[in-house]
Length: 280
Image 1: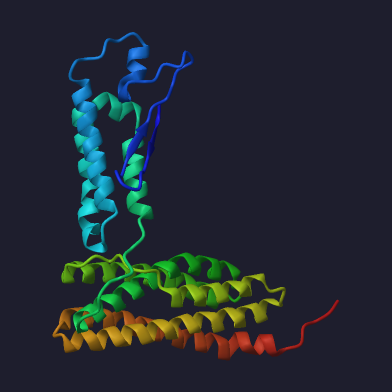
Image 2 (image 1 turned 45 degrees about the vertical axis):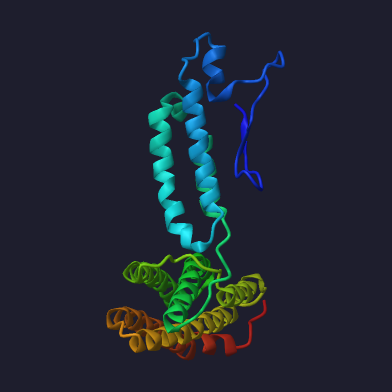
């Protein structure tokens, strides 16, 4: 089969493949014709209809973030439509589906969101927190694996479960506000996690590594505590009591995690790290 290519202006083009004799395939039904089946007269119309739908998706996926919800809703529509108008192609070639998924996954979020009022500021803060929490769900399993202290490892695993719930809560808030969760990647959390990942590369005694892990984790917690505190203030001023209540539940869990980390550090990890390393 040929390949789908995204073009700067038209949005999408199809590059046909040539057979051993140099004959170009004629659309997406080339394989069936090679097998001796005579193409139906309406297949050209089907192909053009499918291409039109693909171009519509390509054009839509390159618009601003306001179109992100509409763009996402086109994916199942594309799949269903293509299966109806070209069922054999749907079975034999998933190029359209791969293109649609890739376009939605890799499309860059808009960075030019205008902040004109406190509502916009709240949405901006929520998107930042959402990105931060999503990044943290990928980092916590590594931190739990690197921890030697059983209580610390268990604490990281528990907070992973909480963080996944924090993501769910934020998604429910976006739904309540009728806005997309899509926004820029949280650079603050990215920097904190990148710095914290260096701990895993240190050649240090286990207790020292645990102490470094706690320090890195508490930086993350303090960052989130500040963000959730601000978001709660914005929500309360805007009369969004329900949203403020959900955010406060998360804030309380972040504070409890920070307190638990301090307890583990002061009662065990720091004391063990203070002792001189034994030599053989």
